Image (cartoon, rainbow, N blue to C red; front, top):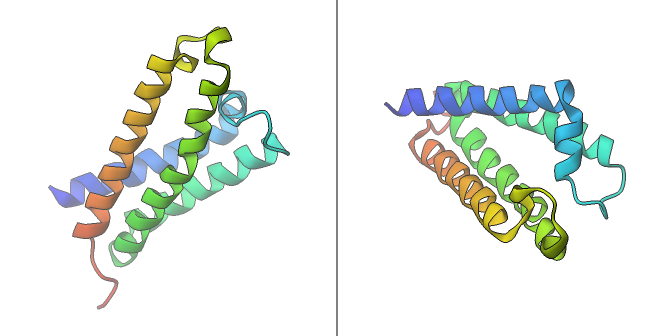
Length: 126
């Protein structure tokens, strides 16, 4: 069961990373407007998603990959909270308080999933 959770997380992160390059506009809209070089941020975060997904996919690096995934998704949380600054004028439901809360809860679930994979992963020793 834990191998399935790890493989699914690895695939999820890899696909997420790839879609940063195939649908960059979606991710650019998630990056707060005050962040400089938003296209570069999208590309770097996509590459990071693929990298942590690869780490999770390999049993010898699974523990480190799980922790790296948890840290990366945690680093994305401010971007999901940023719409609260302008929630009253938000056009999209996902940018209103209930939508932001849902986004944050979903991402906290991803963090918990990554932590679970990290805790059950191999230590990297042969």
